[in-house]
Amino acid sequence: QVQLVESGGGLVQAGGSLRLSCAASGSGFRLSAMGWYRQTPGKQRELVATITDGGSANYADSVKLRFSISRDNAKNTVYLQMNSLKPEDTGVYYCNARRPYFNTVVDYWGQGTQVTVSS
Image (tube, rainbow, N blue to C red; front, side, top):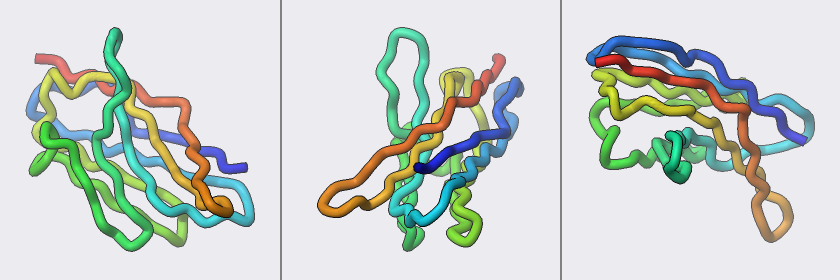
């Protein structure tokens, strides 16, 4: 089993920055992709950014050039540096980790951390 613990959310003014962290714990696992998703009331959870264990990153168009995802494989930790934040970035941010399991993958989710950007 893999547990994900997020930190770093909070309240920030538009144009400000926040850094989210997500640490995976457990034993005997290897994680492939890790990433961040966000959800706002009434909307589906949407991808923000993902990164493979090899370091290839993928971003939602809305956050490109503003957000940066990185990963420390030795610590099983993924980070999301969020710059030039906008009110529309407000939401609950969820960490995701994928673990290969035989012929499939298992998805794990964190509890979510609130990010609020005031105008």
